[in-house]
Image (tube, rainbow, N blue to C red; front, top):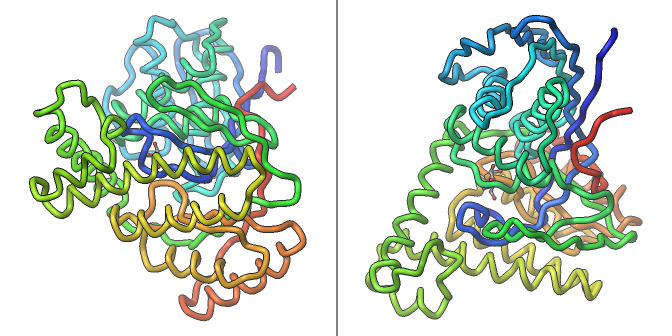
Length: 369
Ligand code: GLA
C-alpha cells in the first residue's frame, strides 16, 4: 500500500554491568539478532490503530484523546511512546501499525524496549520527523518510566537504538557516551532461557532502585557532590559500613563493585583476554545473587550448569533478574555440546525444557528496505 514502511528494532543481551545503569554507572550490552518489526501505513485522520500479530489483538485510539494511563496491556508501550513523542513537541500523523515480535517476551531480552524503539521509528518517520538515536532512546525510556510505570534505566532502549553488528558497547550511563568493543570471532553469545519469570520482578526492581537511592542519600549528607552510587568508592563504602543497614550496604557493594568489573571487562575484551572476561562474568553473577538478591534458583542452576561445560569462559544472569535468561560466553567449537549438556541438566532438575539461543551481535534499529 502507498506510503507503507517497515522498521525494526532489536532486543539485547547484557554481557556485564547489571543494575548499574540507573546508578549512572557502566553497562556492556549487545543488540541481538531477534527484533520487533513495525509496519506503518499512513491514515488521513489522527487515529492510531495497532495490531499485534503475536497476540492477534488490536487497539485503536485518537492521538487527540489518548487514555493517559497504562492499562497493563501490550499496547501501553506503543501508546506511551506516542504520548511522549507528542509531549516532546513532535506532532504525529495517524497510522495503522502492524507489530511482529520475535524477541522472547518477558525473558529479560528487552522485548519491551524493542517494541518502543521500533514504534518510535515508525511513528516519527510517518510524521516526517527524525530524532537522533540517543535522544530517541531517552524518549522511549521516558515512555516506560512515566507511562508504563517501570523505572527502568537507559540501557535497553539505548542499545536497541545504537547497537552495532559484531560489537558490544561499553556505555557510560551518566554521559551516555559509549565505546565500541569487538567480539572475538571464536566465541558465541549463548543465551539460555530459564522459561520462568517470577511475579515480583517489577516490584523488586523498583525496590532495588529505592535502596540505591537510600545509599546515595547517606553519602550525600557528608559529600553533597555524590549524585549517584557511581560517585562512591568501595573504600568509602567500607568506612560507612556500620552506619548503613546490612541490606543497603550489600546493595551498594554490588553496584560499586559491578561498575569496576565493567571497566575491567572492557580492558580484557580489548586485550582479547577472554579468560579474564569470563571470570568477571562469574563474579558479577555471584554479586547479583548474594548482594543484590535479584537471581533465583533457576538462574543459579543454569549458570552452574554452564560453568561445568568445556569451552565456557563465563556465565551470568542477564537483565533485571527473577527469571529470564543467562548469558554464557562459549568457544564456537563447544556450542553444540554446551546446548546438549545444559538443556538436559536443566530439564532433569526443573522439569522445564529451556530454550537456548546462539546469538550474534546485531545492528540497532533501522528501516527495513
Ligand atoms: C532491566 C532494565 C534496565 C537495567 C536492567 C538491569 O532490563 O530495563 O534498565 O536496569 O534491568 O541491569
